[in-house]
Every structure is written in structure tokens, then in C-alpha cells.
Image (cartoon, rainbow, N blue to C red; front, side):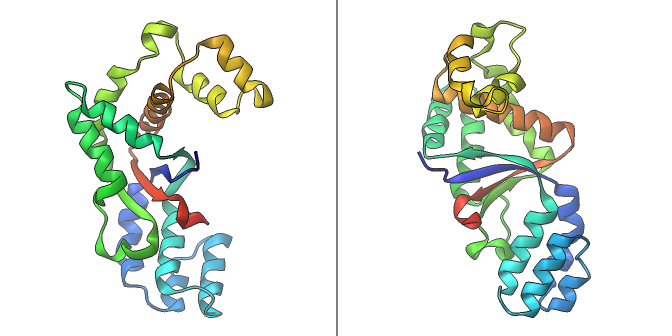
Length: 208
């Protein structure tokens, strides 16, 4: 299935710092005061040549300065995963949060609406709403206490064994698509939590 969204680690501390200036920036000169790397300087150049809009420049600045690491790509199967969580006792609130992130504009401010592609984000302190997922990892009963979600995540994406990942996956333990989502999500949560970052969901259309 085609990727519909990306979940990124979100540097909320940087976002908090640049938000007032970014929200009020309406000229290339205003954006130039925020530019501090080749990527953001290029955004200013595009504004000067009128090849992008002010709104697009804001999005690009935010993406450049606040998105951390590689994203977790998700497709329409994520809705099935969330629906499954909602049916499990004790996980209803986590399901509501994930659903709102994808569909309901969790924390999204008005100036980020429109074609930004941002569907919602979680502040660092809100990650606790998803901590119950760590206790739900199905692979514990299959891989045992030594199961390593980070390694399993790399195998699943081909990062560990490249072309042999599919074969390696069969050699380890076959798991369901929902379990795969859970493993990836928990790994991303753990990394974001350890850096006091949040999470942000962006539509794949924003990068096309």
C-alpha cells in the first residue's frame, strides 16, 4: 500500500523558539532572520524569486528545523491498527490520541492549516498518553525478554540485511502487520521520549 502519512520525531523546543517569528513572517527579509543553514537560505531565495508562497515557506522552515531523523511511514493499514487498539481494554485513550493525530488536527494551530500537510502533533509531555503501548508489545511473548525492537525494526525496513531482509524476517519470527506497526511506533516513541521531543504527523502529499 502507498504511504499516506509520515510520523516524525518533533523537536518541540526548537518549534517553541521559532514559532512566534515564523507565524508572523510575511516577507523574505523576515524569513532571512531565521535562516541559518543552506536549506533555509534556499527557502529565502525561492521567496525572493516568488517561486513559493509565504505559507509554503513557513512549512519548509518548520520541516527543516523541527523534524528529527527518519520518519515512520504509515499507510491506510494504520487505521486498522488504531481500531484494534480501541477494542482493547486499557488502550482506548491511546487509540483516541492516534486517531486525532491522523484525522483530527491534534494541537494544530490555525496558521499551520491549509496545505501544510501537518495533521497533528504531540508535545513531549503528551507522549505519556501512548506509554501504554510499550506494555502491549506482542513480540515479548514471541521473542522473549531478549527481543530487540530496534534490531527487528531495522530488519523490517531492510536496513540491516538489505535485499535479504525478507528472508531474514522469516528466519526470526513472522509477525503480523499490526505487530510491525507497534514495534516501529514504540521504537520511535522511545527515541523521542529520550530526547524530550514530541511526535508530528505529516501527510505524504506534503513531500510530493
